[in-house]
Structures are given as C-alpha cells and as structure tokens.
Length: 293
Image (tube, rainbow, N blue to C red; front, side, top):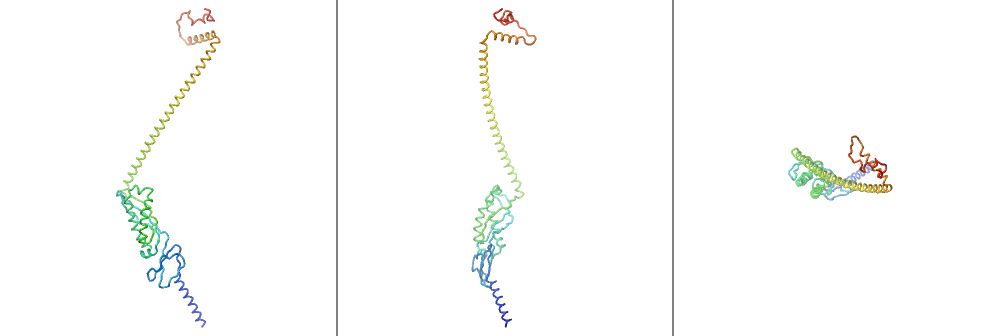
C-alpha cells in the first residue's frame, strides 16, 4: 500500500511538472510571440513575461525583435549618365508585426532575408538611376539613402511585418572601363580648381603689392616734404643767426669771408687768377683793414 501510494505521489508530481512545463512559457525581453492552435494564430503580439497555454493543442512561436543586419550582395547599378557602379550595402531591419511576419515567412529569418534583399536591390537601383556619379561618390551619399529607406520601410511593414531602419552603402567601386574616365575627369576638375586658386592668389598678390607701393610713395613724399620743411627752417634759422652775428662786427666778418675766399681760391696746385691788383679782392692782402689801401 505504501509503495503504491508513493508511486501515485511520484506520478502525480510528474504529471504536474509535465503540465506546468507544457502550460507555462516565458517570452524574453528581446522577443515577441504568437500563439497557434493547430497552426492557426489565436493570439497575436504576445509581450515579454510569463504566459499560459493549453498543452498539446497550442504552440508558441517566438521571434527575435532586436535590430538585425542583412549584408546584401554587391550589385551593379547604372547612374543617371548611364555609368556603371558596383555597390556593396547592408540593411538594418527589425520585426515589428509578429503576426504578419509569421504569415509571410513562417518565422524563418533566412526566408525573411531572401524576401528583403530583392526589394532593397530594386530600391537602390531606382535611386542610383536618378543620381549622377558625382552625387553618388560625394560625402553626402548617406543622406541620399533616406528616401529609399523610408519608402522601403513602409512597403516591408505591410508585406512582411518588418521595419527597414536603415540602408547604408559600405563601398562603391567603379568598373575598369569607368575608372579611367572618372579619374581623368576628377584630375581635370582639380586642375581647374588649382588654376582658379592660383589666379585668385596672383590677383591678391598684385593688389597687396600695389597697395604697398602706393603707401611707400605716400610715405616717401611725406618724408621729403618734412625734410624740406626742416631744412628750410634750419637754413632760415642759420641765416638769422649769421645775420645777427654779422651785424655785431661787420668789419671782422668781412675780413673772415675774404680769408675764406682766399683759401678756396688758392687750394690745389696750378691755380691761376688774373685780376687787377687794385681790385677789392686783394684789399686785406694790402692792409689789415679794408679802409687802408
């Protein structure tokens, strides 16, 4: 009796454990779930937490709702001017409608990626087809992906129940037949810009040099005018001093000036003067005073 009772207790506990394990389930914070009954959805978008289901008849499908990355295959696109580019890109996507996602992909992430990639390829092909090569290789090319991202996001929400959060271009390569032409055009563009900068520099140099020459001429003219003014003032002051000194003893200064004239006349060798001995030039050679002849 005791053994039978123990077996019943153990069996009951096992049944309870089995019932609990098949009736209770947990949805993680990074997941959303749907409840199925014989393959038909009976509860949508189950939130994180502990939940209950009917064993055997009901099953739970959980989906990762974190942001996922899809690396697309490198594709060849034509630009607005019909030049080929090889684009390598990736897509950030996330499950936002578990019910629609399950209906479209059966919850298979690989199947979702196979459905998303052609749509991304088509969107990028259309976008690159309306851009020229210069716009594609510019630093603002990430901004050019905003339009395709928004359009594809709206489409994928309806078709697959996923949100397209971002489309980014990792790399853009040029085929060999296009690279040479592009590099030649880039070189020509840089040379044209260099010529413009040189011309502007030369123009600025001429302007600075002309301005410096003008200021130099003005400063020299002002200096000359100032020097002439000072020289005139000095000469006037010297004449005044000389006149004042001459007025104090006219006879002495007449004698001094005559000596100075003699010195200048008889300097050097071979000088000859033909003068009348009675001229006033020799007055101080005849007499120490001009009045004595």
